[in-house]
Image 1 (tube, rainbow, N blue to C red):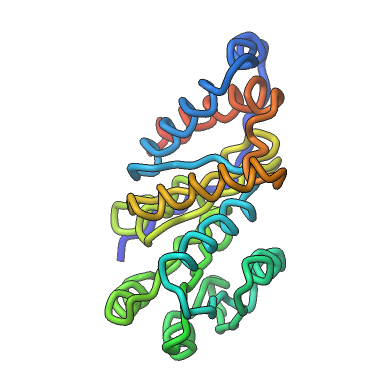
Image 2: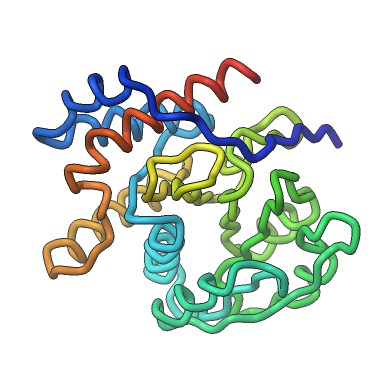
Length: 243
């Protein structure tokens, strides 16, 4: 197994970021360009901006719930950020826990597989501290049992597993762009996928929720369209240059 770790870093905000970011204040073209650049960087056909990583995860759960009615279990590792369970509960689903590896704190594959049932909608392997989680056994089992795989890549954008960037390996992946992350727009998140059906459903859900007043696309505010996106573009360039 070939693993490439991406360390946690930050990028300073320079004058040219402010100047170039001002061009994105009017309209949403900056968001679409950032989505396209992010998809190119990760290696997926689709990248969908959201208010934060948790919101991107929540939107993917709603889309998968529509695609697999009757399934309501989501398996996550016991050691992860607590807000994953909040998103699962908010989507009307149930959280199931599996164990982690002692040496990497990543998801333990056999434990996750043993927790699967006929009610399992999706599993969420987490790439902790920039280290890609071993996915081979999880992916093959989920394919056999028609279970979705969502990668939590919030701590590992740019990391690779067997030559593929995390977030492009499962059915979907989600990233946080908040302060302190490898790629940051100060706040925000991104959902990545190669699944056209999921992408259509997620964009539809985002539009419906936004129209109803829910904040599924907070990236549309002026701050993220200007300085934040400019900073994100710069970090994408730096990460792409390293790999």
